[in-house]
Amino acid sequence: MQSVSAPQAAPLPAPVRPDPVRDRWAAPMRLAMAEAALAPATGDVPVGALVLAPDGEVIGRGHNEREAVGDPTAHAEVVAIRQAAEKTGAWRLGGCTLVVTLEPCTMCAGAIVLSRIDRVVYGALDEKAGAAGSLFDVMRDRRLNHRPEVVWGVLADECGEQLRDFFDTHR
Ligand SMILES: [Zn+2]
Image 1 (tube, rainbow, N blue to C red):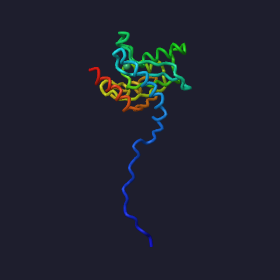
Image 2: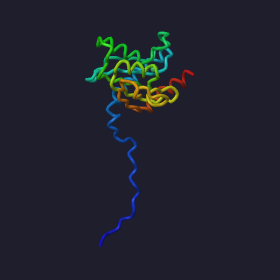
Image 3: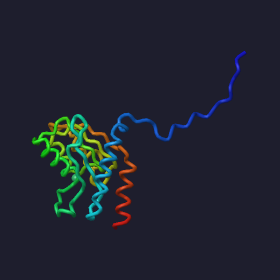
Image 4: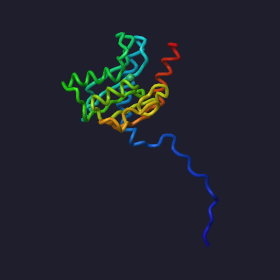
């Protein structure tokens, strides 16, 4: 005779599931967050970016420095891309990955496309100005001839918290 066990509640999902797509970018995202943490010293919003060579070496890093240098284009991504191009001696950054704590704006998405970077990994969504899926989706627009892979939401909560902390204390 078969025993019939009482119905059991479905097991609760683990709080943090392994996420192979995003987990591999957590370590570089933490480096980008450390870069972002340098921005508030000059009153700049904490956004940080890295450019990684195909082998993973950091070849560019930058944080938002609009206030520091008085330049409206001095976003973290642009600073990091310029440094990477200078280091490699070439404007084409094919095979490289850009890691940034906040979803890129339209200017930065444009700079990423122009640099031929092949992958963009970002943290927090920017629902007001993001151009990588939120407000626009510049980098995956089929009308453009270069479309990097986009990985969004890596350490999104922590990246968002870093920004909220800044605005809570500076505004
Ligand atoms: Zn930007």
